Structure formats: structure tokens, C-alpha cells
Image 1 (cartoon, rainbow, N blue to C red):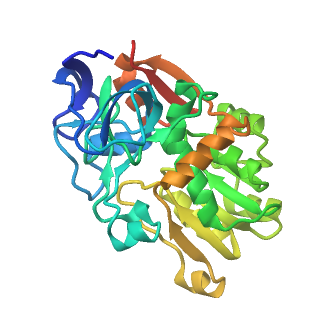
Image 2: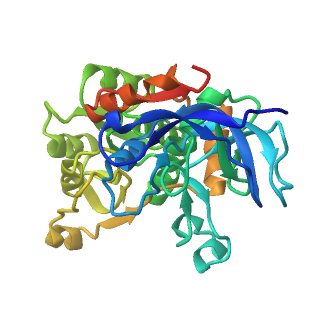
Length: 349
């Protein structure tokens, strides 16, 4: 299999807005030990990519950086020691590019909190390029029945919400509340929750997102611009949500979540708005015996399971395919909250 020495990548050299993203010619990487080179065909655009561009988080970012971490493509070269993957395999490149495998967290299956974790499109160059390097141990094999453009948004959005729903502890028949339900992560969370036999309260705003949630059989839609969110959630669930999955980038969502939570329930934090604080009333947090759980990414097993739901037709990403060249425009729409579902970039355009 042949491939070029140079390629086009979306690079930023300093933090800021979409105007800082430049399409530049960069070398095609050489896979090292336990690495593969993946010809990226499609890549989703995640809100985390915007956070990385803007420098929102108190984590060191590689600069200059090629962003992106929802890639789906084909292995074109394997590095030393790679036996699990071969040239021609269809794989996904995820937010968790690699973990050390040897620390106390990796050894007990908590690889997502490995202190040596490498993050695609953050600490290492990601999928906004035609050829990306991926760790062979962590690259996810994509079932033949799942098109690459469908698999791309599952590589972060799908895996993330699937793991977070497991962390919520919500049982079949119980209520999960999802602020941000109409977005890239949210519309998948609604579907995974329904496939796991949960009842869903979806919180978002606008007719387009209300329709999207209805298409995926969300039980209740609450419009945060027109409804009294706390009171409506309590009324519809008969006392509050058994679990809450916060996917909204509005800090207010965290304040409301503690207010409509059912006693003994768990709030799972996923969205990380810049500078947001958890403003829960400690009295009610204690008296209601509420639990707060962070969940930022899924494991290798979560990745396989999340894709299996898609392969079985139980979860269907709602997405729009756009040319790679439109990435700056996508960032602008994302910043304005105008994207329902997910944008997937076609790297051939």
C-alpha cells in the first residue's frame, strides 16, 4: 500500500478562535513501536476540539497541534511489535490514544485515569489530517457492517456517553436526565439510554433539537429557555431523576442538576465548561445523599461495546458530512450552539 510523504493537516500554533486554524502541508508520520499509521477517511468534530483550540482547560496542550480525536480509517502501515492489527484493517482513533499499561490504574482496568495517558488532538497530533499515528493497542477495530462515516462520531461521543451511563448506576425503568440532549454527545446518550431500557428526560432548546430527541424516542423534552427545568423534571419523573448525565456546556446545568436530583441518585459530570464550578448546596447534597461522579472517556472494552450497539442497529448517530475544509465554520457553529447532532468531516474534500 502506497501513501505520500506529505499531507494536508488542520494546524493551530496558538490558542484562540477558528481564524487560528490553518491548513498546512506537514510530513506523514512514521509508526514507531506498537503504533500504526491510519489513513483517516472521516473524522467527527467534538466540543473538546474547540476547548483545545481556545485553551480553555488547565492541561498542557501540544503546540503546534493537529486537533481531532474521532477518526475512522484504514491501517496503511504497522510499526515494530504490532501483531494485533494488519494493513487494511478498519480502525477508529479515539481521544485516549494510549495508556502506559503498567501503572496501578491500568493494571486494575482504570486505564482512563492513567497518569501517563496520551490524548489524540491534545497531547499528541490527532485526526484532522489524512494520515494519523495511533497506538495499536488502543485503536478500535470497526465492524465491517458499520460505515466509517457512522463509526467516526462513536469514537468519542458514543464511547463517552455509553461509559457515563454505566457510571450513573441508573437501572432499567428508572429516569436518566440529560442536559444537552440534542447535541453531538446528547443525541447518542438518548439512544444508548433507551437501548439500556432507561427512561429519558432530555433537556435542550429549539424545535430542531426537540424533534431530534423525539425521533430517538426520548420520553420527555424540557426546553430550558421556556420551561422551569427543575419543577418540570421533578413533576415528570415523580420526584426527580435517578441519575443525571450533564452534557451541556452551560455551567447553569450543573446548578440545576443538583436541584432536580432524586435522593440517593448520581450526577455524572462529562461536559467541562471553561471555569465552571459545582455550585451545589452542601446541605441538600448531604441530606439527599447525592453522589457526584466524573467520567471523561471510555475504556477499550467500552469502545467495543459502544460500536456493537451501532452494529446491531440500536444506536444511529445523527450527523452531517461536510468537507474537511469547512472545519473553521464548524467551530463557529459549535460556539454558537447551532449544531444538532454531529458534524463529520470527509477528508477527501
